[in-house]
Length: 342
Length: 266
Image (cartoon, rainbow over all chains, first blue to last red; front, top):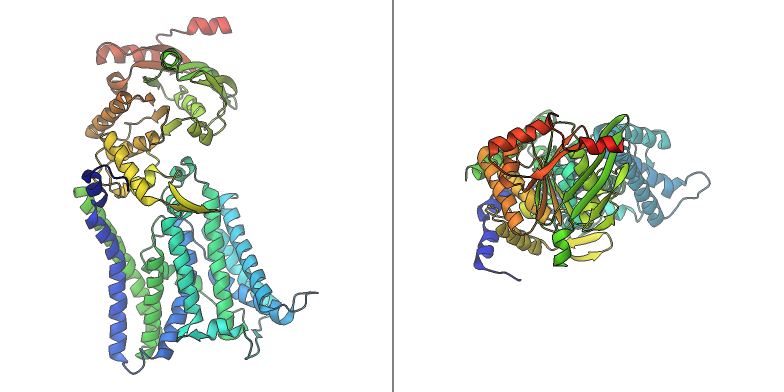
């Protein structure tokens, strides 16, 4: 604390109103989330807050929250990752193959080595995306679209289309199905990962550089930031999240199946966008992405509870996405105008 | 020390040559910058002024020629090198991250680190904010808070932040590429005030500009390049009108103070 005067103190605390507006961004989502919960609770007081139902919602939030966090980093840094849904299938199937069947001459492995291998493979896929984007200048949309197809195809090829089922008493199933104090393990994993990534984005130089790369990549470059490394890092994290979710889903479903996770990348993107992330890069928060996933989780669950036609459910979800983005765009423009006028 | 600094140029570039394929962008340019001097570097498009400054800031490596910094020969092989030697560049389009606040931009790539564990480097945000605040106050840059995102600033404020950023780390030489080109009239006044302020505080500055009245207003000396050669190098004197006419006559090739030298070399 080596303050030289009250002037600096005041100047530092100057934009109190601005910080408040920034908080309002999440406040809007929190209000929407609470309102949805209250509505479904009012509609189905008998079911909505049941521990079993809450666990269902939490597993949904964990699945899409984890994918959204990976997506968040890639999107902030100015990219997009379309491969994550297929990657959950590939990693789940790879894990099941390693643990149940073995590959070629390698006999079936235990849980820990299989998990490690799966995460390494996922990380390498992310590194591949980063390499193609930064060194070969392939647009992120295209290179991850390629993986979206290839990972799904590989998963189907490895199993010839059939799921690989774990024995029902297999200890691995604890990760996806277990609970501690009625909180699903999956959700606890999300909380841990979210805390780490929140710390990364807000407190470390790497986090700041991720925002800088997404905001103005040339400015980041001339500031001496290793731009390529930052972008590759984001792709690796996204693929690692897909691998982690692939493992959790395999555990949850009790099988490695090549059809799991279809369109999950779009759900993850929707969650980040509902949470206030800009697809143009440079903007977005962990808490926003998770709130986005939470809103989707509560809606998907609540609409089933109130017996809304499953066709209409998609219509409502799509509308929510559009409303959220419209609101966020409006709020941001208004905020910009207010400060400019000052 | 003070005796030598008075006579030794802070920057001396000798016989700098740079070609891009068949195009000779620089054909042997000499350039000196004295301590606490504001040098205007002018020339028509493709005269080589930006190329020359990119050589000094490490973006280009010259084919030939030497660079001396405070009398010592230096080899600048990249922007990082130049920065380490105290040569900072302010870019025409500001080169700021609009999504980050003022303090984050001033310290971008040079964050104050509280503690580090391998690649995990935790920032000291408060120290950066306080130091940014002090920097802006010292330079009379009027930004209501260092926590404002740059996207909320006017063009003049952005340029001021970009210039402030270049001076934040004890730069010896500040190169400004068209610092007023993208600005409104009132913002141009602010930036020229800032340049005067920097000079008053002892900075040595090179300004590339098409706006000759700006050079006339804040410059001590002007160097004119034409077709990759220096054609004029003299102190800024007189009124704007005659200054402009004289500079333009060099820019278009009507006058050339160094043509003999070239003839001898050839």
